[in-house]
Amino acid sequence: PERGETVMQPDYDLFVYQEESRTYWFNGQSLESEADFMLIGLVIGLAIYNSVILDVHFPLCLYKKLLGQNVGMKDLEVMQPEIARSLKKLLEWKGPGSVSDVFCFDFTIDQGSTFGEVKTFELKPGGASIPVTEENRREYVDLYVDFLLNESIRTQFNAFKRGFLLLADGPVLRLFRPQELEVLVCGTPHLDFKALEGNAKYEGNYQADSKVVQWLWTVVNEMSLEDKRKFLKFFTGSDRAPIGGLGRLTTIVQRAGPDSDRLPTAHTCFNTLLLPEYGSRGKLRTLLHTAIQNAAGFGLE
Image 1 (cartoon, rainbow, N blue to C red):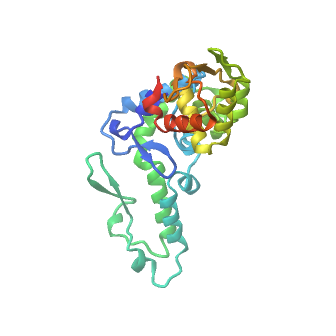
Image 2 (tube, rainbow, N blue to C red):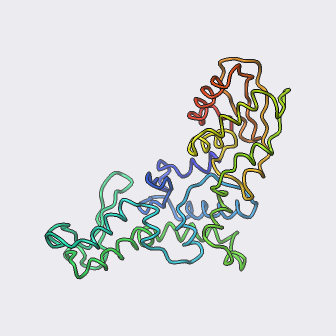
Image 3 (cartoon, helix red, strand yellow):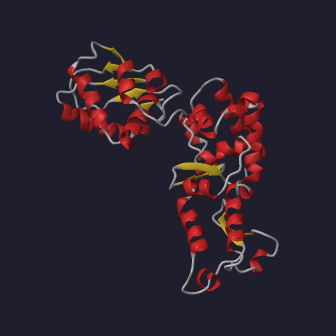
């Protein structure tokens, strides 16, 4: 899972991180070769073929595009809501002032490059000299959305799709909805921690009714959804459930010595949580919280 997350980092120049939706999207200004994007697509297809869950966070519109479905404003609202709101404001503007006077837009779009430079692209031939008005603003918005979701990343996405379809293509693929394809790649977003608890195993003299074990699950169930995801990431290496839910995970809670000030640790490859026998629930809560907030440092891949 860590490697899947690492290749998504902007430092690799393949994808850009979208803070609002916490997803990664293709870097249309990437200097990397089509072969690199094809390889990433191949890895995603291979993961589906082998029923391996990956810790990758793409917007749903990626899976729609892989299935040959059209994408548009509704997808942009999910992926980049601030931009979508701005475009809708433009469409709904009724004054005071005209669209051209208030917004001062033309048929171009600015995008940052790999080296921090801003590049300007025309949304249609001669776009730099065509002002956006009440009459053509719908065309402008349609072209703007299409540029972000399709045109600007066409080369990168097509290479990615070629790699993906090498292993994942076939009649069965057409039966999936985008949401189902997303679940195949990165697991279900629904997290049933009662199911996780119910399927957990215990080692090192811990039992399901051990006081520390009961404290652990009480603390976990009291967590916010965000912290639950962090706990799952710390424990298993991914903040998503596999197909079938958390009850399908085989997890182990192992005693890691007597009461101490040591933080819990984890062997994510084996879904094993190493938990000292803390003297109080409050102490367990504090140290577990510290550990999951720094999961990359304390989880042992």
